[in-house]
Image 1 (spheres, rainbow, N blue to C red):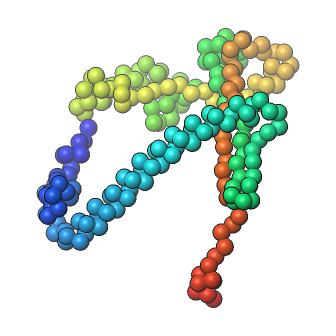
Image 2: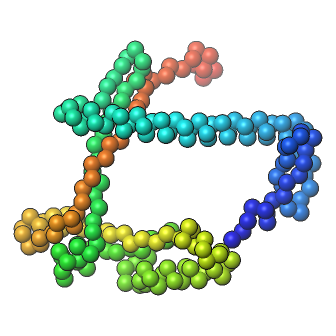
Image 3: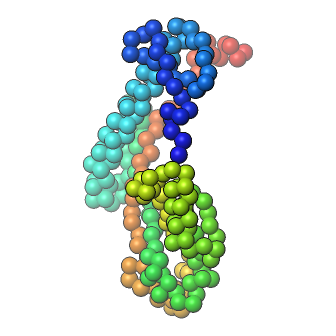
Length: 213
């Protein structure tokens, strides 16, 4: 694995505690004002990143507070305020997950015609080409060969089998009672997404309008 220190080096500047990062084996001449500009932008970037992270966490907490009311009051889905120029809408979404082993038992010989298995390791593997175990073994060997410590491999390598199911055909078979899905084969979890938008479209300034014509 290529390390950042193998590609870049740190070079001191006139500002105490501040270094520029440059590609190794290069010696760029960087004016002081460029260093100061980079430092200013970096500070803004970092501040924005930390603020976004903090506000995202706060929004998640607010979301958890409002969900019980949406669930408890039938029909309630949001709020609009022209005074605050905002609208909030709670959108209900269903997340379906399947138990692969129970689905195999439920479908029997029909499994292969309704379900396609794909192994995910940041690449798509067609079903039947290679097993999950063989793929993992091969990728682990590759990571070891390029210098990744054995103990670090589980942190970097994540492989899972995903199912592509012909749900339309499956629903037809279930409705016709030709297939009986075992309990817990199909799990449906209700999730909530929140859309928050301004009600008004910002008006262009007179200066912008004049510049265009």
